[in-house]
Amino acid sequence: MSKREFVEKAYALAKEQYAELGVDTEQVLREMEKVVVSLHCWQTDDVGGFETPDAELSGGGIQATGNYPGKARSIAEMRNDLEKVLSLLPGKHRLNLHAIYGDFQGEKVDRNQIEVKHYQSWIDWCKENNLGMDFNASCFSHPKADSGYTLSSKDESVRSFWVEHLKRCREISAEAGKQLGTPCVHNTWIPDGSKDTPVDRNGYREILKKSLDEAMTVDYPKEHMKDAVESKLFGIGAESMTVGSHDFYLGYALSRNKMICLDNGHFHPTEQVGDKISACLQFIDEVLLHVTRPIRWDSDHVVTLNEDVQLIASEIVRNNYLDRVKIGLDFFDASINRIGAYVVGTRAAKKAFMYAMLEPTAKLVEMEEAGQNFERMAMLEELKGKPFGAVWDYYCLQNNVPVGEDFIEVIQQYEKDVLLKRN
Ligand code: RNT
Ligand code: ZN
Image (cartoon, rainbow, N blue to C red; front, side):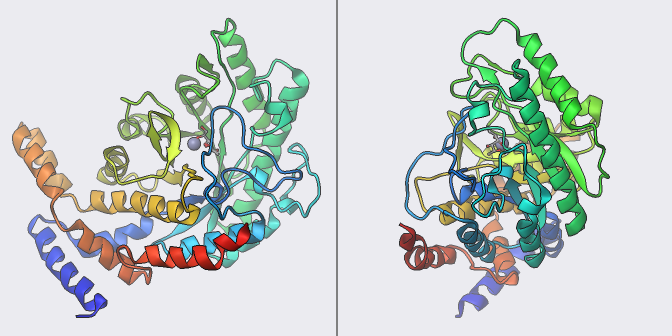
């Protein structure tokens, strides 16, 4: 039997099994088109960026560990890598770019000087590759972030520098969204915080509020760009207080009609972002996700199909929230093949959505409402043994990307032909 025949046969059986539960797998395959994942460019080069001179990743406890060979050293290499990654992923995508990845052509352009022209080649590349674009201010890895404070700094020259950066990033975002015909989500994350117990928590938060308001005075059309703000509990070296905490940004997003960005590495380990989605969406129009895998801290390990990610996907699918939740990724592992990391993590995130779609939700809710809690639990457990993998394989086949583990070989070949030659 050929691989294709095998996958088709397995799918046909899976389709019947799911149909018995009242789940239409054909419908699921169509729905997967709505799962658009924004690819975080920074997995290709450990959040380094292409500024001149090279910036070292620093600030706020974001850290890439490892020195596996093959890191992208230029825009050309990064695009090559991204194209490879895209060829191994089923479904639709966007590009999520950080400001430090501008096309600066060897020129020194400080963060308060960036313009649309520095990102035009990325916008063009997105157009060629049929991708929407998302964008991020880069308020770290910079001498003006060394104090540990950026937008909330009490030093006016530092604060206004970052306000200017943010203004420009929003303008670039709006232009990208306009050119590409799909709104660009601009996310603001800042590392600001304190290692030891601060006294003036309130002071920093007042300043941050003022800086955000200042940077966001221009109201761009929502078809061009949308603002998101990303909260965090703590960072390494900023353990005692994070200025932009969840309470702070939830209030900000609510009062200013912004999106809230939920990164599942940014909460206490017993808190689940999956639980926060339906809470936030009662009051906020849209949520941005940073899907990641925190291990003991916000370590940004490669996403795997674990319970946390599953709950996030299931909550979105169960409640028909795919239109209101934008899916971004935020992991960076420099200790393994970076393309492999990228593909495994992104495929895992997509799998979580497909798994969620293969759930007979209405039936489960019925049980729940009838107080049949043993039955609900039994059903949820039995679902784990259903042939989800057969549907996933078929989806990959349909999308002309490697089925099952076949992508491993492709990445090994790319490592040999391209990545290892970079050193
Ligand atoms: C840091 C935040 C932030 C960054 C990226 C690079 O803790 O998660 O989103 O990881 O912007
Ligand atoms: Zn994040």
